Every structure is written in structure tokens, then in C-alpha cells.
Length: 216
Image (cartoon, rainbow, N blue to C red):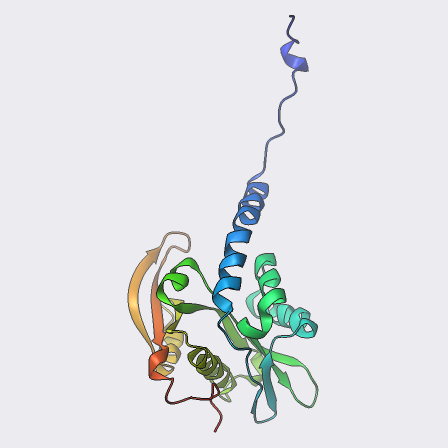
């Protein structure tokens, strides 16, 4: 059997680094989604709470787009498709939004998820928590995080984990005020920096917030 001349043999097109990254992400999506579906089954949906003129509420389908836009504005990067999919499925248990009650505008957000280490240690990880620039300094961000901690404590979780830059003293101090302690300091090869792995022990909050809210 005669073989084709070399210049007529079809060769696979080169695969770009970006395509390879997307393929790897798609390949890991099912495991991450299934892990979160399994771990979140025990969580309660976030209760509604109020802080002055603001309403803190669980993420709903109608607020996912507004939440993603605020995240992108605060972080200057897109809201990852895998996180968007996860929160579309489990938003009321894993994410909070803050609205101005008068205008309805979303001015704050927080989302959480279970990574592999959290599943083993009975914790949940802080994905992101932040508020718009024009409402900072009034305690809203701290209230939102306390509200999440209280609900996770009432749901029976053992703790909440967080990773922060070792150079970010402000974030470390906020975490420490909320009950987080540093359990590990490591060098992140991807970010090229020292980071702290911090955990808040929710067993200490269960008696303080027995009804799952930080409001009296």
C-alpha cells in the first residue's frame, strides 16, 4: 500500500495554551460541582437580615447577574463560568448579596464554596466577600461576614477557611476580629507570594448565634 507524500499527510492543528486551560477546567467541573452539591445538602439557606438602610439576603436567580457585575467591577476580572454555574445551582446556600432597600441596587456580595480540603476538614471556603466603594467604612462588610458565619454555624459546619496574602495586614486583622486564626503560612508558586491559610472555628459561635443570625 502506497503512503501519501509527507506534504499531503493531515497533521493536527496546534492547540493553544488557552484552549488547553479551558479543556482542563471543563474536565474538573463535574467533580467540583458534585462535591459542592454533596456538601451543601446540609446547609440552610441564608436568612434575610437588615443593617441600617441595607438588606442582606440570599442570592436568587434574579440577582446573579447584578452580583457578577459588581464582582467584576471590584476585581477587574470576569466572574468565572464555573463559579457562575455553581451559584446558579446553590446560590441561596452559598452566596449573599446586599441591596440598598430604597434603590434596590446590589452594593455587596459574598460567596463561599467547598474545596477538596474543606470536604475533608468539615469547613467551607471564603470565595470572595466585598462591598461597593461608596458604602465602605460603615461596618456593612463585617456584618455580612458575621451573618454568613452565624448561618454556617447553625447549619453544623465545623469552620470557615480563608486564604489571604501575608502582606495584607488589613485583611488579616479583619479575619482575626471575626475569629479566624492562622493555621498555615506557605509560598504560593502561582502568585509568587507568601499566603496565610486561616480558619474560623464555628463551634465557638454556635452558642453565640443559636438561631443562625447575628441579629438579636
